[in-house]
Length: 309
Image 1 (cartoon, one colour):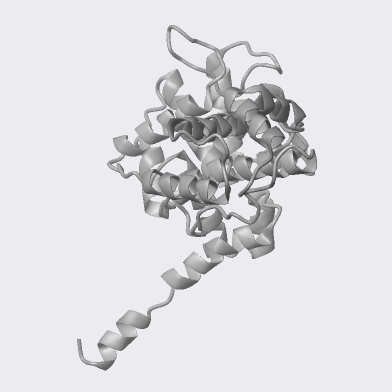
Image 2 (image 1 turned 180 degrees about the horizontal axis):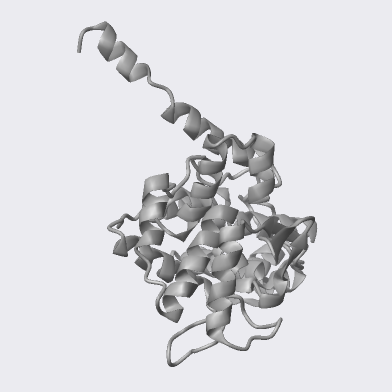
């Protein structure tokens, strides 16, 4: 690719940070998205600098993607490539640099879930192993019961306040700020047993206000402070291990998969499960249906029986 002197200078600005800063300022996105894009672009420009590339061409972006694929999973590669594509699209629209990343795809991401769901027996074992004689036990029992029956994400649990427990029709409900949302405009209905568990925990905590976090730290150093998503994940993982379930494929997100799977297995429709999980696209929910259909497919046993095995 032949670049003009002006284009060469512009790309040098990008590598040194000037153009990069203009692009970040241009983005109209949530702070966490801007932070992620910023990190990804820094990695790309570091790659260019380390390889002495001052006039990147399409083949350089392809080579960058190939190097990423040697080191990272498909989802991570895509997360690094998308901001690069957006950067060069912006640069081309602004008349600053050719769009050398156009049509360069991210890595192919499998639609299979990265984490496993729990069986009915396994989730019962986890909950039964929790000693509710102490505050932390009351909290963890209520937290895991809520996440399992309502399919909540860790970030939704973290954002929940005491005052978010309200009513929806004739049921108690927890109003939540879902993924990508700016307000608590969605809710999940609380089964009576889950509401009882939550209120038992809140009563044991003592006086709390409507703005207090629904689930709080019970440690001496951070007592009463809001749990982080990392803390919630650690609590769930610890309770799984205490019940003898220790696998890289079992995490806090497994509880969300469990909610979807058990709802479908016990008569819930695809549309009801989509509403429960708050998926904007029903195709995302259909992945669960595919897994259940395959799990109930006994073809292998029929074949083995047919040949006398």
